[in-house]
Length: 524
Image 1 (tube, one colour):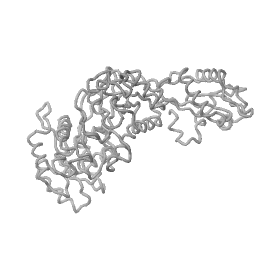
Image 2 (cartoon, one colour; image 1 turned 60 degrees about the vertical axis):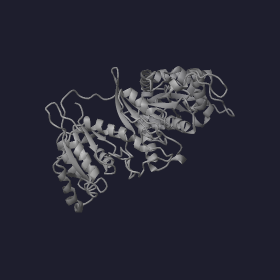
Image 3 (cartoon, one colour; image 1 turned 180 degrees about the vertical axis):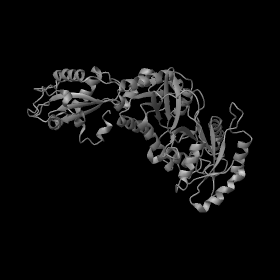
Image 4 (spheres, one colour; image 1 turned 90 degrees about the vertical axis):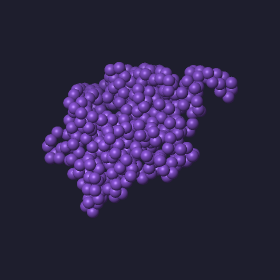
């Protein structure tokens, strides 16, 4: 069924983002005392547990919004290069209005310790006059409840009750900092949350993280994909702070696009909010199935682009390199007087981002919509490719052909041999090779082996994780599982004497003693 939407509104610094994190039981939104941290509307799907722990769990979409009038004063109005952030006010309030317009419940957050302020009264007036909110099919106005935040202990409860003067009923009370009345607040929120009728909301087919440096055009791309101004687009660098989730339909496929903050060099960070934004970008990459790595065609590839490239390579996620702003770059000439062409751009990208040599490149203009659907189609293809599993027999035949054509170089007669190969995981495709001695496989040969695997297996444009395991460890584990002696397997074929087959090997044994958690590599 469709999820009920709960929008959190209020003036700056009343604890809206902290409230979202408390409901989600996770640090979803950036929390910082600096006004204006949240700009776009941030949504997160949560599960609300029944008060008696026996009723059905309710799912809901919680939407955090920016603060009303955040940049109307001189405090924090200008950024580090003197740009007037007040120009974002209209966009921020448009995002708030859009969140409230689609909400089934409105939580009006007010700081109990600060009391009622003129800004709070102005927001309450907008809610009463229906300038925020909507009526349903039965003419009923969206339910509004005041949430008294920062009620750190019982001493602040009388102050919280003063907020009943807004006329929205008895205030809900909670403290995100001390967790005072948290259980009572969540129980009341559960009872307020409706169960909407309708068709079940399908799970998304792919989660797509959109990353890139500042002003590369990520938010414009998100809005083009969504078909609406879902996130704020501004010439002011660093407008996006949080990771913003946007659901997109592409034909019969559903995609969750995750817009992330534009990054720059750490030494240029102005405050800890930028560190939080970097953390959110890393988390977006971690939870994504595929990545759109956005480059600005009008600027050179920078150190930040290279650092982001390394972050993506380390994640082992399929990636599409998106060259944006082609409408501005097409036909331009470089310092040598040569005209820009797609081929020259591709050669330049391959030269500067060697670690992503396998990744496909899509040339787009997010502003004009040029090739944007095609870039999404490529991303879906990359995710499908990374989800492919090859049979053990096919993999061993491929490895055998590679070794026969060119085996690892011998040193002082020490022969490197591959006895058995298996794909133990998808996303990323993880291949384990049982060898006589992993140290005999040089880095150069591993690179050669990886390139040949890309040519011969259906993983030509996605990352492959290659793990070399010593045969002695696998034999020991298989012998223990079998309860008898293990004979030497045939090279490459993986076949053993007597009745001990490949299937008798506990594949998890191949992953023992890796620096990462073995369970992260193995499909359940």
